[in-house]
Image (cartoon, rainbow, N blue to C red):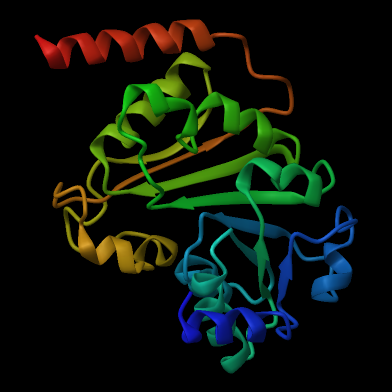
Length: 239
């Protein structure tokens, strides 16, 4: 490991806005932020561009960037401290362990910004909008909590739309091409751009956005039907 990373990891331990695999934080985020404002998570946040951008826009809300890569979190946490964004924090942990860090209903919204689309069908359960993860989010979201997906992956966008349709989730907004008419008419939240957005890794030349609500009741058991849809899509690609 390079000296730069070692220095960052050591400095990260001193940052007051970063918690690394903390114990007994569920229900105590009000103490962390010193207020009772609504909490929004940015999952797989990387350098936390969205958590920072949202924090700048909404002083009346709290934002937590979640990632396991400390080298990237360091960048966002450093910026938050420099800008005195006291409503932005970072949690270093695995996403599949997220529920242990929050009480039920403690989170209001979740942003998923340019995650790994996990394009192979065999890895579909690793997609952050798979029902496996939606059920996990339900454990910490308030009833009717909102999920935001912003991605340049047509495959992940299409898959997420399948999920909202199949599980009968309330779609709030669906944009196949966020910037099709320029930046006029889109929300300030959607104007926030991450490093990965500028790369256009998928080569789609467009950004997709989908937001929907998760119910307070358990999702129906339609996972087998979703698996069949994925299998059929894979067969179609091979034909």
